[in-house]
Amino acid sequence: MVNINNKLIEIKKLIDNENYFVINKPRQYGKTTTINELEKLLCKKYLVISISFEGIGDLIFEDEKLFSKGVLELMSDNLEFTDEKIAKKLKSLSLNALDLKGLSKAISKFTKESNKEVILLSEEKRLDVVVTYNSFKYIVELKIWRGEEYHKNGLNQLSDYLEINNITKGYLVIFNFNKNKKYTEELIKVNNNDIFIVYV
Image (cartoon, rainbow, N blue to C red):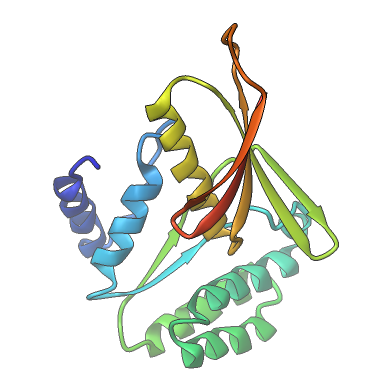
């Protein structure tokens, strides 16, 4: 893996100086790796809450009340396994977040009462295919075969998507345009996630 320590130090300076920032790069340029390593670095000093709006549908963005409550619930869900007490506190604050003003007040109240300064990380990604059926969600990544290195990056990318969505199994469809290609399938493990691969 490429050493990104210098990059992390520069980003941490922005945070320590209370600056907002955006990491914007094409796919597979290491954004997820950077965010994950940054979170590890920051949690020593800050309360880090990482959220993602992936896979929650469009309805939440059409209703101010749903959005306001939804943001706090996403924050609460992120903390549920690391600090149940703080997670419950955030969940209770969502009851009074009926609009954006209420959301702002709730976040302000939470940060003032927190023992640590609060950092909110939001990482948005484009998932190729997400199929929701009843209570199940299936994530399918579509790739073109471009060699082993590109393939490894694709597997890690899908594994990151699965972790963000709290899913342990994903699907990868690889389109191989080589003349001597074989139509095969396999099930492999990547970072404790099951990935079912189909080559077509």
